[in-house]
Every structure is written in C-alpha cells, then in structure tokens.
Amino acid sequence: MAGGLKNKTALVTGASRGIGRAIALQLASEGALIAVHYGHSKAAAEDVLAAIKAAGGDGFLVQGDVGEMAGIEKLFHELDAALAERGIKGFDILVNNAGVGVFGDVTTTVEADFDKAFAINVKGVLFVTQYAVPRLRDGGRIINISSMVSHNAYPDFIAYAASKAAVDSITLSLAAGLGSRKITVNAVAPGATATDFIGDLEEPFMNAIKDGTALGEIGRPEDIANVVSFLASDAGGWVTGERIRASGGMHL
Image (cartoon, rainbow, N blue to C red; front, side):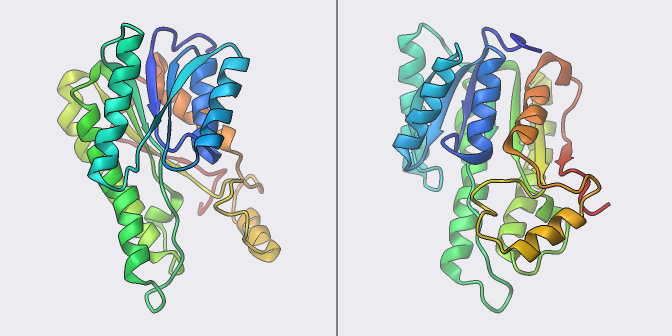
C-alpha cells in the first residue's frame, strides 16, 4: 500500500508519542503530508517530524490543548496557516488519537481525574472534529482511537472506560451525519499496547493480559497504526460506523 495516500493530508492528534507517533509515521510512509499535533511535548513532536522527514516523508507541527476550546482554536489556526503556506486548502484524514488515561474505581476516582478524562477524550474528539469538518474534503476519513475498555468491565478504570464508550457513541453519530459527504468515520479500539500508558503495570498483571489474548502477546503501536492506515486508504472506503478491535483477540 506504499504511496496509497499520496497527495493526501492528515492531522494526527497526540502524535508525539505512543500510538499517535506510530500512526503519524505510518501514514507518512504511505505518502500523506502529516500535521503532527502535540499538546505539551514539543521536543517529542519534533523528533517525530524528524523521523518522518528522514524516511522521505513530509509534515509540520501544530500545537494546542484539545481539552479546551482555546487550544482547539489554536490548533486549527496553526493548521490553516501551515496548509496555506503550501498552497493547500483543506485536508483529507483526521485521526483523533489524543487521549489520557486515568486510574480509579468507583470509590477512589476523584473529580479532577474524571473531568480531565472527559475533557480530552470526549470533548476533544467532538470539538476537534467540529472544527475539522468544514475543512475536510468530501470522501475524507475520520478515525477515532477508542479502547477495548469501552465495551468490557474495568472497575479500576471506570472514568477512562466511560470516556472511551462516549467516543464509540460519537463515532456512530458522526458516521450517520457525514455519510452524505462520503466521509467515513470509524473507531479503532486497541487492546493492551506497549506504550507508556501500560509501562508502569506490574509483571504479573502484564502476564495476565497476555494470557487473556488469543495471540498471547501485548500489541505494538505499529499494529494499531496498520489498522488506521487501512481505514484511511481507498481500500477502507466501504467501512464506516464501525468499532474495530485491534487487540490480538482480547476477551474472546
């Protein structure tokens, strides 16, 4: 599929690390111009952009806190300016990857963590998409990064799981609402993936996760990026309104 996204432009939120980084690199390898978004880690985002260019791709940085409207407005102001410099109007692919994980069950979750999860994971997805829609070309792609926790019981991640369930709901409504423009909208739900999100989990818990997957492994960010790449491509054009589990077979 190399070159399958040539002449396409993609905005990847939360692209400075983990799954977002892998998605940005993968879409760039397929020929897309990448808007590498970051919230706070400019040095990490610059490293992603350098890796894209070293591999023969192209992109630029955009910054903004997607948990607040001012940050979203800033993000799109920078996006518009960068595209205008290149003589480009609009873009083709939005990957709503930026997110935050919070721990806590019904007795230990605090309001600040709940608010943070919903501000970034839910409000960010909805309003980044709201700003993106007038700029997205007909036939474009929106891919939201959900999670396996959204459809399973995870008492120790209750607020995070709820926020990702909201992403799944938003995905369905967007798919129905944007279908007339041939814009597809899907969610990708990773299982346990080797990023800093699970990096601090103890070995017995990690082994239990592996034992609970059909393939017996923890996923890699690249595994998720490959699914996103398919959905972003012409080959994924008949898929919309779906939540695709990319988990190595968790909870079968």
